Length: 154
Image (cartoon, rainbow, N blue to C red; front, side, top):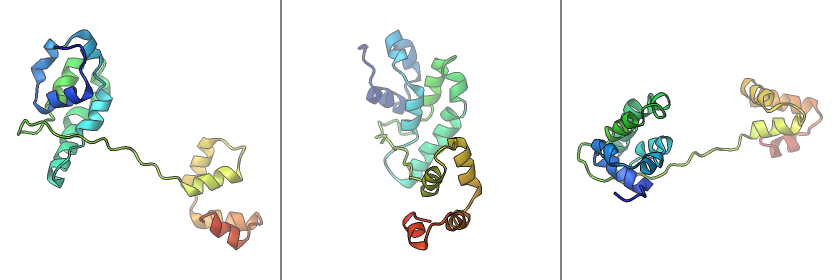
């Protein structure tokens, strides 16, 4: 087996349920496995909604559930659990990367502007416990006019 074991090769082996491949991998190939990244790819497949739901549920139940407690101490077991997530048809699937989309929290950004010397953890707590009407009232008390408050998105 060649020394390069790309992510594409890893996903193909998992899709084909190649649990016994672990013994054939070199040390460098074993070290190239990033189980956290594999977890992210395994849970997404292209296809029907049922197939996508199946991939998420199986990956979460079999692989993701105890991943952090086993991946460093028992990498062979982690590989076998990843392979157990393959679909019954044993064909190579396309696993798209689904990025994490983070929306900008306008209320938190406003609190950061209002309290530039406050700790971020305090601002996040304040963001969690106040609603927009309370922020709006505070801004009015601080001398903001309605036009400026509306422009701020509150």
